[in-house]
Amino acid sequence: MGQRSANRGSGRKKKSASHKAKSRPDIAKEKTMETPLQRAAKVVASACAASSNFVKVVSLDPLKTVPETLFLNTFKSVLIQDQDHMDIFRQHLLLLLPDKFAPDLQPNNLPLSPDLLIGPVVNYVEALIWKLGIP
Image 1 (cartoon, rainbow, N blue to C red):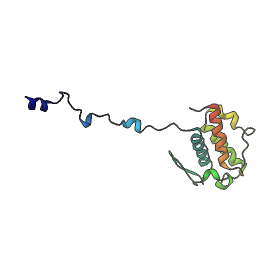
Image 2 (tube, rainbow, N blue to C red):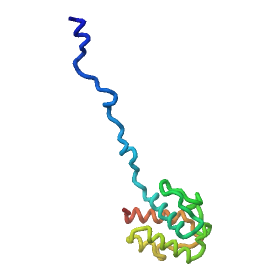
Image 3 (cartoon, rainbow, N blue to C red):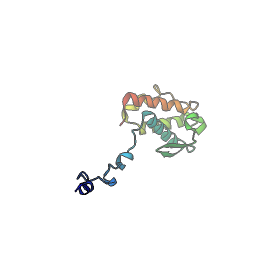
């Protein structure tokens, strides 16, 4: 009888390896929320691309542009070279952002010139997103 009880074990069934918790692919594929800086960069890059044949947005996620160093360039160096082109760029910003951004994008609040670096405009739009929020 001693032998027989040794073979029975505790009476509990072992859980199989397939019963263990599985990783959830729906959670693993979730993307983190876009930061205001990322959103601002996408908006400014898109406005540049819409205003100049020289600029291309190759990918939005992750953001990739041609030229790769877009934000280190002046507007003039990417062929947004006069005030008419700057006005077109501003109009594209206004189209890409919610209406509540319009007052802060007007010339008296955001003076733009072809000699201006593009990066600081990204920083300005980022600050507006922090201030006003964006859906």
